[in-house]
Length: 357
Image (cartoon, rainbow, N blue to C red):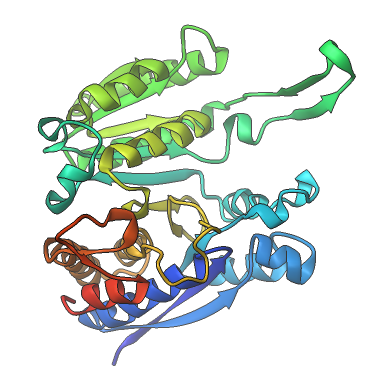
């Protein structure tokens, strides 16, 4: 008898419904390998929830997520909500879910598929061995610190944001980085700005303490500006990068560009509650509803979901292998299309993956 797992599907805005629908089809096909069946529960968040309920993250959505085995999210936001009050912007849904579910860590793997190496803006010899994970702290730092919106007039108009980190926040994200590195190549790069920021000096102090207590892990320390440079000079040197909320937000997008396409990279947000999985790209409102979005980032996020939350390792392996085979077969959505390849829409790429499951 198959085991049933409950997954909350949050389509969100823009291309969200298209890419989540694609990922659901792939997951439903793959989890049979682990004798699992998925019960999908659709809930609203982001701009869609603002339009329906006047708030970006309804309590009903939070409750469903808290009791589910996993959450699969498309994307949130769009220009139609640019003028809403800052307290109810669509992005508040993401921050609210992270807080409500205790999702203090974001895992962002950056891997270049062999079939796509020439898509990277870097020289081919620099990207042949790129395979690293960014471990980003999610619920501390400047995004959750005190702030003051602009006040005053003229040259003295002022706004400010406060960056804070507690010891426990740094310790637990370092523990995740160490656990992740132990399953990979055993190397961690801790990224901070300790030459300027007091919060970074605490970050580095705790990182050094963790390194001293885990001598089987090789840890080095880089300033964030140097890391940004190294990601384009020699990205293959990295195994696990652990860093703050703000720096991780920036570096993970740089890593996506190194890989050649934002549309292919997945992410997992984990912590003390239900884990959340989402692609790192945005809602792409300019192509929403046209059926041409690249679903691979969401499909690969769903593979992470199978591996980490649904206890479906065979399904995860099958999905990742199917994506690689589809790319090797020349299937390309418009964002990664080149002459000589087989151009497909969202449904076509999904079908290409499904044929290899």
